[in-house]
Length: 106
Image (tube, helix red, strand yellow):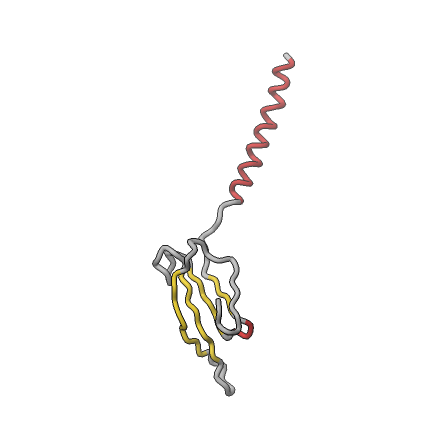
């Protein structure tokens, strides 16, 4: 008789544990990566990285566009960006952070 009482208490506890574990498993779902941008101080250089199989990148690896940005003088706010290079990254994963120096090194 005491075994049946123990089982009656154990089944709801087991159900609660399974329920809690299912929520933590759903929290590990990652969404699709988004394009990211990194810039040097003063925005003299900008790196834009696009995820694999995205609108701007049809390859299997992340793709980096690296621009030199010039600000012409005068009263008009015009950004003159020149593409320095474009290359697929060695890593299969998108970078979380990157450092762009004021000399144009990524």
